[in-house]
Length: 177
Image (cartoon, rainbow, N blue to C red; front, side, top):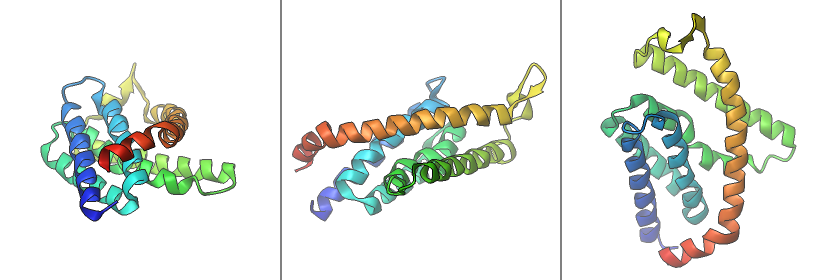
């Protein structure tokens, strides 16, 4: 693919991801669901244009989300994990021992989510009461449940990548040809 087509495809993915990030403030569950949906776009970008273009589109979406998105927690979730994870996942899948690959993925996820928590609490000033249910402070429970959800997300991302390679890749290549 020529450089100008890579630029066009990368720009379209960045714009669509940014659009999704902007509407996250409108949808009640958008804080967590929209960054996941936006992240799926980067599978196509990595496969069709390569890592460099995908990272550039991720950077553009991240910066523009900081400027334009009302829901900053959504933006932080995207920047610190969901935006780059599909790009990184392609590289992580090359790690041969499955157990080591899973451990590395979980470490990356946990570091990112702990960073999201501290940024949300201390920079975005989300009160600690938002993390309290029936008087019980639950961030560690949320993180534990998040690990289970992350494993499901990673498995789904793998399945979507396989489906993309089998079926959608040919269609996308014809469209951007």
